[in-house]
Image (cartoon, rainbow, N blue to C red; front, side, top):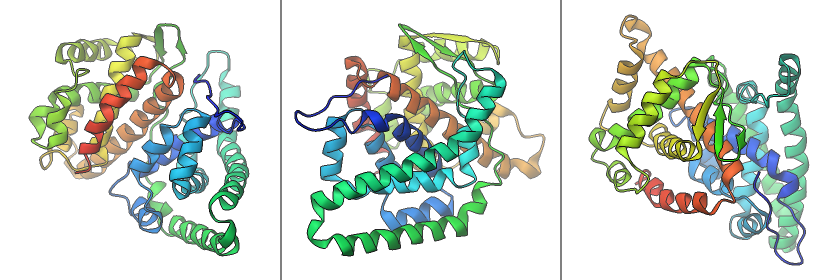
Length: 347
């Protein structure tokens, strides 16, 4: 677990909220990865919050970073918390809760109870934290206009709730599979306990990443192959290992393999958010990998479900790695290399 670095003389505001922020980041990423869905489009129109905002807030791993974000993007952070509450109150809430991974000590009954209680936990603590941080920001940035800003925030909350009420029906019809890969990290070895569909999505990530430069001439796709972390042979070896793995059994990865899988998940995740491939490129790949051509009538729905499943599961993996590796110097260097490439996807 990442430790907190607090500026001298200021209270530690990150550590008490770390678990909540991770959960909200996972929920918001799951929602805003659905780029074709009318709900995130409506929310973006109201707040300008988007996947890039999810990344910026999720990149904060200590109090120093949180204080900096509160200075530079106070509205982004308060929007992050507010949207997180609405996500967990929506049909996506149970889908995110289903991602809660076994820790090795909980039996099935205990795990089921934790999953059932997770949305209520997030809603309670997110509301408390929203009030706390909003009061801090009002006194810090808007003391002279406190009443006016409070009224604007109240109106925004009503508008966001109305958008969820209007469009959240589209979230409940997916039948999303769950959960993402389980990954308790210990020492240099990483451990996953995936279901078959989760293995499939990890294979999609490593295979698409290897093929990405050939699938598109977009600057993002071409920049990927210039990353020092892009190693076709290692990706092929990791793909073969994942393909040979048995679902429901413990899967062991070295730390190097886990980080390579993080690179693959993060880069391929962008394909579900931005149109960087040639027309039909990713859909054609998913069709070929999953051999769905026997049921032509349902192909559009199945493609959509596969995209949603991959987006949710890959985002879950990203969040867990960030939470556990955030303080490691080599991971921070890896993030620094990735960010300029990720930024190209939105161009």
